[in-house]
Length: 203
Image (tube, rainbow, N blue to C red):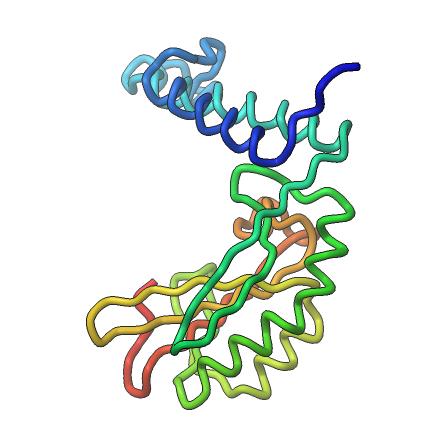
């Protein structure tokens, strides 16, 4: 019987392949920067795009493997903020979510949002707008409204010296496509940044 690779093995395989591509051991020689303009292709070095495309091709193959063999893309994260520790599932950035993963993410959404609300009480909240280029301050009630129309949630934190920023990602659709506009409208995200009063988000 053929061995099926698990989530952690796929992550290691992808990381190894990424390093090979970065080191120039894997190139997609057919990839060009501007296929419609061969003059620009001759001016700019093609190797970076060939490395990137080679990795993207391999990653796509791994994603198809996940679907075919129903290999989860979920990993578990543990986050401690203000002496509160929370464990939650998220899709590894190199993998995709299979249908069972999306169901688990939906089950955990309310718990993720509740934890974020607890550790950000009294902080200023900002919604990222204009494709993440700007932000506007919002109220907790507006966060609740966004949470109600999204499917899953994820967290991250930036902390340095006196600065603390806690980001709540509220998304829908495939998480691998939700962070970028390429998945719109089937997948997407809203980002809420919490910072100390009178501070502004830096990420």
